[in-house]
Image (cartoon, rainbow, N blue to C red; front, side, top):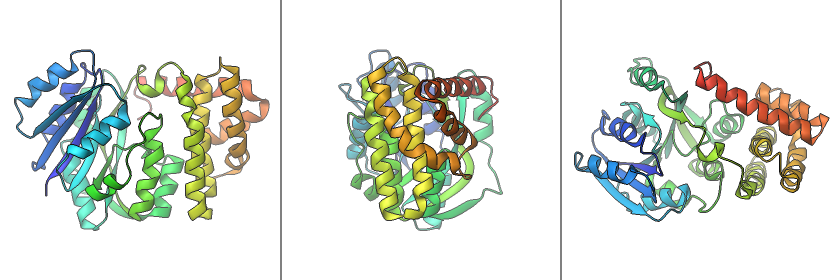
Length: 332
């Protein structure tokens, strides 16, 4: 069965070859590598062209810079596989990534499978590569219904919010395009994939290496476009709770998290922080009392009772601490 691995790339000349080589080395060989260069201005395009000459499974297209969602949607349109998976151009995957996700998907006859990721800071590539490439004879795969899968997604246990880490039946991805021109496109679509697929196969293996970069989209300097957090969090909360009231607490936690991330970046912009703060207040009581919520979300929810400015500082401090822990390999 042909599987399409869609790679999106924008100004990742330092990382793109590592990413593509990890895909080329898959133990499952019946793949096509669909690469969408989203208007890179560095040497990314040249390096992709050099790689494409060595692997006949590559489909390569370059477009005017249009954002991550547009690049993924473009990749889906030109992909030929019965199944689709996504890899970001600055990350890399285990040689077992495609094989494991495909086996998990077909063994349970579901439309979607998922694995864990390891977050790392630049310089730890060799250690991470060795860890994710080890074949585990005792790999555990479980079948999750949509309720449990959404609960895991909302509580970030583990972190499975992104479009990456997963394999999808082609029809599923085609039915839910990524929202173009928006931030938080992964958050806007991941829960919809789960709702529509009804069940998901989940492997306990970490097969994806997520590179933590200070200049990534989510860590770049604040812009007003990040106010997309408000609409995205509202849609997520309303869509999940309208169908499953028992998920009110997890959905509140997810909506709270999206907004608290952005308010920590926007602390210099009073008008914007006021807008985000009003959203945070909708969810903070639920999160503060939710014993199932991650401890750091409950802690930040309780800090919010001291006011907007202290909360924004606390959220910013938490993000900085997380980067430090990842940089030194303490948090994976």
